Image (cartoon, rainbow, N blue to C red):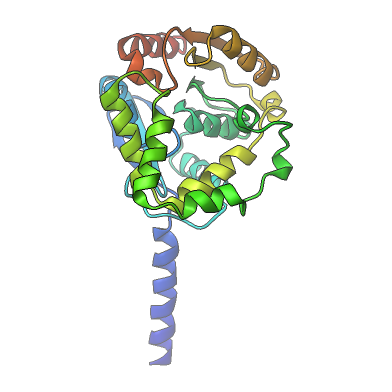
Length: 279
């Protein structure tokens, strides 16, 4: 009886650990694998107009990260766990030579992965930076960013009405389409609150600017010019990506952070061109 109990406990622990995955993946289509990473708090639906078309010629692996889109949250640190488990997923499924398509945080994650996996065919990044915290924190130093701060505690304990109002203000400058703005808000509101707060802190702590020297994969960058203007965006990308050897920078004129919402047809065509560069 004791042996049976021990086996049952071991089985329970094994199942629990296995269920605490940092992402879920939906696979669609056949062909060259494309790993699709949405931005912070978003689901793969942010890419749906693009991936529905690409799945006719490519095998799409669309990720939803823990704490978002109904995927159960995980323990912290959140982003490092995601990175390690995605690397494991890539190795287990022989996806080392995939193309990676990432938006915002998803693009930052793609860069992080590419510092270790040098076999990716191409990274296609949509309004993504290697050090997002630099834009938001004066005299930025990743080592000084803490999890337990008054601002984090404030957001963590907001009621749902106040949180939705805050999310609405954040979404205003991210794209011009009002319905799409509401979709962005809905994704943020539906997220696990601790993941939203502490996961974002993980992202702010991440500084890959020096690590870019390790990347050998060709990178195509799409940069939104709104709301800051092309001159500011050019300076930002030039500074943040100065250590990345192989990259092409393309400006999405007049588009906000969610380029796929403001210029969907243009972006799809540009992504097709980037994919075609791989033969």
